[in-house]
Length: 424
Ligand SMILES: [Ca+2]
Image (cartoon, rainbow, N blue to C red):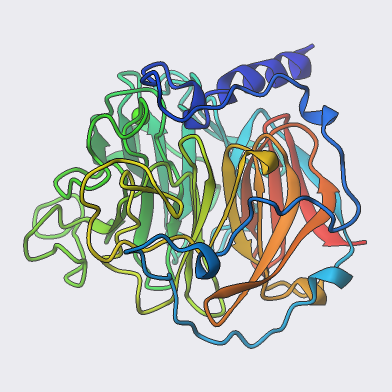
C-alpha cells in the first residue's frame, strides 16, 4: 500500500514538472495537456526506431541570432550506439529518491528522498528534514553534494515557506548528520511552487554548482531568466566555505564577480535546469532544461566556454523564439532538443565514462520523466552525430541520474527503484 501511495503521490506531484499545467499559464500560450495515459502505456522499444521527427540538432535548425553551442573538443572515445545492449540492475528501493552521491572517504553513498530524508544506500537514515521541507509538486529535498574532501554535505531543498534553501552539514565518519550543525548558505525567495531547479554538485573546478529554476508560473512571468540580479533561472557557482566573514564566497572568475549582476551567477537564461552534469573526461557542462510547451532542451557548453553563457530563456525555448521583443545578443542554443512526441520533462543525465559498456563510452545519456526510456546522443565537433533510444524503459516516472565513482551510471525512479545501468 505504501508503495502504491508513493507512486500516486509521485504521479500527482510530477504532473507539474513541466510548464504545461502551470496554474498561471496565460491563455494562448503554447500548451500541451498533462499526460493522461499510464506511463507504462507507451511502447517500450527495443530498437532505435523511436521517432525523431521533432528531434533536431541546432546545427540544422538554429534560429537566426542564436549561435551554435559549440566548437568542440574532440572526445577520445567514439561511441557506437547501435551496438549498445543494456539492462537495469536494481541497487535499492527508497521513497521517491531524487539524488544519489558518493562521498570521498565514505563507504556508503547517500540517497536524498524527496520528502526530506537522507539515507545511505544500505538504508540507514542519516538525516530527517521532513519537518523543514515542503514536498508538493516539484518541491522537496532536491539535491545533495559532498565536498571533494568528503568533510561536508551540501543539501538543497524547498523550505516551509516555499523558498529554496542551501545548507551545509559536517559529514562525520559515521555518516549521521547533526541537524543542529546545519549552516545556511543561501535562502532564495521563490514566488511559485514550480521551476525550482535543484541540481547540486561539485564541478571539476572544485566549486559548488547549484541549479535554480526561473521561479515558476509560466512563460518566465517573473522575468527572472535574463535578470542578472536574481539567482532564479541561473546556474550558481560558489566556494561554499566561509570567507571574509561571509557564509561563502563567489569565485573571482564568475562573470559578474566585479559587477553587472549577482556575483554567484555562472550561467543565465535558464528555465528549469533540473539536472546538469560535467563530463568527467572533458569538463564539458551538460544541462537538461525543461521546456515550456514545445521542446525539451539539452545544452552542452564546452569546457572553457562555460562561464557567462546566456542560454536565452525566455526569448528562446530551445531553438524556437518564445517571448517577443529583442532577444539577447549571443544567446546560445541547445545542442539537442525534442518535441512532445518524446516527452515533456527532460531529465539531464551524464556522459557515460564507465567501463562496463564500452560502446556507450562518450555518449550523453538522458531521459524524460514521462517517457522514461533511456536515450543517448553523441556529439562530435559540436553536432549530434548519433541518437538512439537504448531500448530500456525505467519503471515508474524518472527523476534523476547518478554517476558512480568509476563512471557507471544509475537512474532513479520516483516509484522508488534505484538502478545501475549495465551491459546486457
Ligand atoms: Ca519555484
